[in-house]
Length: 296
Image (cartoon, rainbow, N blue to C red; front, top):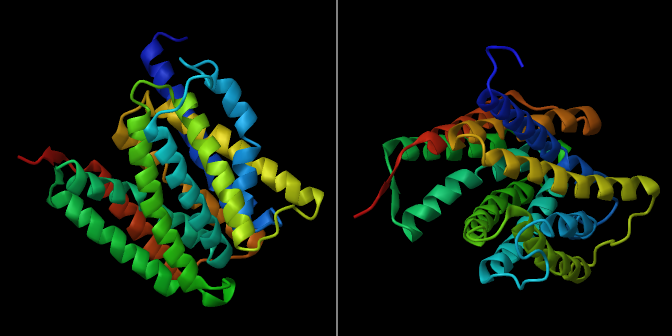
């Protein structure tokens, strides 16, 4: 360690590196969803089912481990996460990777909006401006997408927008679940709840459950790795970095997804789509940095 380096700066650098790694890893999730050779909900099932053993080991290191019964908040978080993955994976299948990923990143704005009404945490004018930017950007992305590159772009975009709501509700439930419980334990129980729900949804939708080839199985393993490594790295980093910095860095996820979609699936972005994506992400950044006041 040089004279200019301190344990604080080293820890901050490690947290930033973990955050970037986690965001980039999650950016590959929609790519793996496309490659699983299963239905969208089935892809979510394999993502969680294959991750459960690793999450169980990690949860054993937390207080209570997997032997103590979960809290109500953990169970609710699992329900919301199952809805989140179901809607998002269908969105990925039906619209472009870029649209599906950028539109789901509206979830921080939804979280703040829910906190406004549910917890009386009133946002100011800056948040309203950011919300307007994000909504305008999302509409521009949907309108400017090349419709020939997607199966059902409008439906896929709507499902991706709905995913932002489900993920916001999951985030709020997990915030409650984390009170008195470690991240690994809360993540294990919410994942355990989500897994059978996704399997039932896959059967109910008449999906292909089993991947048809080794490449499909590798994609399922990749999804599980993304779930553990990507989400885990972000959770670890969030405890060591200011939320304002973390919220901006995590936006590397849709950039990675868009580039990967362009390379692997030849999903070239239109100019209007790129402008809409930039406006959406800028709106999220502005909204996240806005001060929040407790309503009287």
